[in-house]
Amino acid sequence: MLLEVEDLSITFDTAKGALQATRQVSFKLAQGETLGIVGESGCGKSITNLAIMGLLPDTATVHAKKLHFDGADLQSLSESEFRKIRGDKIGMIFQDPMSALNPSFTVGFQIDETLKEHCPEMDKSARAARALELMNQVGIPAPAERLKNYAHELSGGMSQRVMIAMAIACKPKLLIADEPTTALDVTIQAQIMKLLKDLQKEYQMAMILVTHDLGVVAQNADRIQVMYAGEVVESAKSKELLAAPAHPYTDGLLSSLPGKKATAFRQPLPSIAGMVPDLRARPKGCQFNPRCLKAEDKCKTELPALTHEQDRQLRCFYPVEGTV
Amino acid sequence: MSETIALDLIDENEHVPDSFIKEFWNHFKQNKGAVAGLALIIVFVLIALAAPLLAPYNPTFLQDNALRLPPIWAEGGTWSYPLGTDDVGRDILSRLIHGARISMGIGFAVVILSLTSGLFLGLFAGYYGGKVDRLIMRFIDIVMAFPSILLAITVVSVMGPGISNAIIAVAIVAIPNFTRIVRASVMAERKKQYVMASKTFGASNFRIMVFEILPNCLAPLIVQATLGFSDGILNAAALGFLGLGAQPPTPEWGTMLADARPFIESSPWMVTLPGLCILFSVLGFNLFGDGLRDALDPRLKK
Image (cartoon, rainbow over all chains, first blue to last red; front, side, top):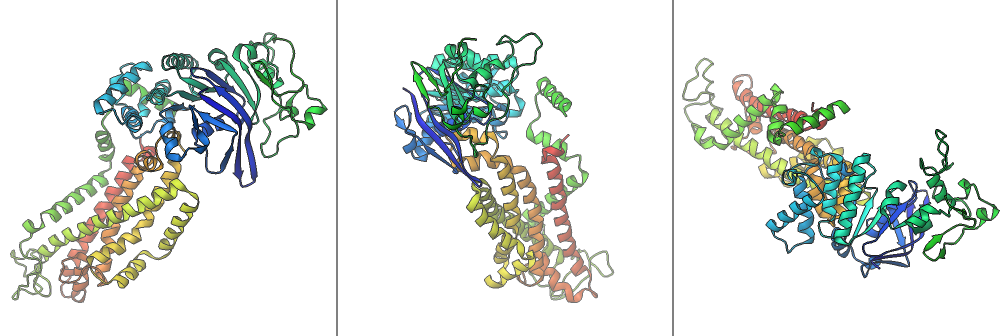
């Protein structure tokens, strides 16, 4: 296993008291595999990724039974050891590519910087050649000229390609894509996802794909993990999960997609009523119970455990039955 | 707003974007005052650089037979001393020319000193926040609580009068300006995503501070540095006037002003000329600084 996360709990120390951002999140990721993490905003998706990167703010405390990446225990790494992993073995791309590039420097300079940091054996001309190769690989037309451009001279899709080029510059083993296509328009989205897929195959990278766009994960992820209020509520192979969602939350997410379920033409789309709970005042029992249509008394007092059944994980007493 | 952005993009695709310097100059030259300020600065800097070549006499040489000669445009003026002589017979033109050298030097040293220390204090305060920020900013608040010239006088009285001590005193007074400006821009920049992105590429805190964030905070800093130049010249001249800065016979403008004060009625040119020099050099830097601000501030760009 490339990445093993077991019982990851992250607590933030805020002025209004402790806030548990994630509770007992566990997942595994093999080389070349793609894990899609879905859930509403504030479900702890991005926080989980930052914990893997070791980039949580000082106010956060991380507890995990296991947080292993590529044979290293991430919890025991010193800051300088962690820095060697970041950008080298783990790359990350962001939601808003326009603001993820430094406005003061050319694109070429920024790619060069990353290479300089992690590949000290490369000399200047080798780095320049690699930068050009990367720009070609991410499909940027006229790469030599683009290298001399500043971030504001590039379009959104182009900037995201540059970010991808920087993230894969050192051939990382894991690429974390935090909503990589959210800020881009639909045609570009498809191109970027295809690019990521191709690069993943070429470099044998594992990928964590965080998104709230179920369409994107459906096409690209091997496994899908649904998170709610900082907990994993359901996790399964993509096809199985999409074909037969068992958790009412997953079911709700899927039925709120246009054209997925048998909603009559021009009928209002079903939606999940209510909001993600305030993590400082979590509900008793199942975290989803205030919004759940199938909730019973048991759900309001007891937190269901994460059950494992073959390759599927589920946290629910009364799972949805039948197929979509 | 969206329309202008779209237009910009089209423009950039059609022709090669101007280099930064060219674009800057196009903005800058529209402000006539700023160009005049720049011209004044260039003149003063050239005079300062070429002082020994330009000055007709040694600035401290006493002409026994030519005390308080008036300048040429006044009755009794001669071409041998175009701007007259002072009460002990020194050529005022030569003293003013050498004074430019001293004032520019003081301004430069003050800016370098206060800029470097203020910049690093602001960088640390803004980037780390929390306790570091509180510690640094309370120190800055204390410095700011004193009227600037009073603080400078205190520092000089402790260390003793003289040019180098005056420079240090004036620089300390100027530190808060730089610290506050840098801190404010760093606090705005450090939340941006490119900072997080460079962390994910494995950059160290120092690297992020100096090589990622700082370059994005330079525009207001450059403006403040120009204005700091004029403040430095002005404060150093004030110290000189009070007898705490440059000591006689150094031809410093503020000191010359003080020396000439007793003769303000009988020989008014002796006070007027160094006063005008201070006025025009400070004016030059202020005009230039304002123009820079307009040209560098992206919000004011068309």
